[in-house]
Length: 209
Ligand SMILES: C[S@@+](CC[C@H](N)C(=O)[O-])C[C@H]1O[C@@H](n2cnc3c(N)ncnc32)[C@H](O)[C@@H]1O
Image (cartoon, rainbow, N blue to C red):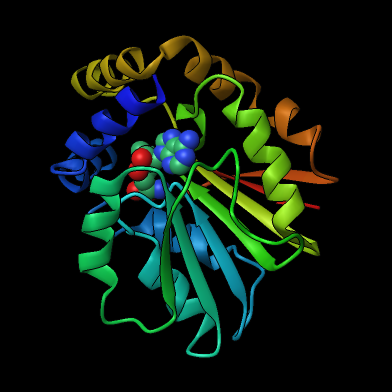
């Protein structure tokens, strides 16, 4: 089953950026800039981007932590990482790792922040819980986890595409998580704050360890 999902994401990587532009109508990437601006990380910070996909966030994160910092993007889709590699090859301090977020190949307590954009609700089975345990493990004691998710689109056509894609990836769990995200996150983090992004039909959950 996991292999089938990887094949799906490998295929999706070919037009993923175009799909997101249609869904979010956020041509300037304002939602992503909003997310990265909320990151409590300075120059020299070490940041992990879970489910990094086509690396849309990585150059923004690199600009935030500067040349002394380190940015790591993790994804289990080879196709997504191939696109990500093309976009980030000019950056010396961006690293791409092929791994499942339910079992992160990193030491404990090494990241100042972990971020996950438009991916968490898509995690299947027990992977959401295992990913949350792993995020808490790899964060430094005062580290933060920021999660950005789509809101349900108001446009009927785009909403139909949104639900069609959720159905394809296992809608029940995704919709369930979208309804209960605050409650789930509070089981793992001392503080959880929700803010609505000014663009991209998205919201950001800011979690403190
Ligand atoms: C909707 S895309 C989001 C990409 C990116 N974060 C963004 O904001 O554009 C979801 C990504 O999650 C990845 N993914 C899904 N399940 C995963 C898992 N268990 N481990 C690692 N990556 C996973 C997929 O391969 C895909 O690249």
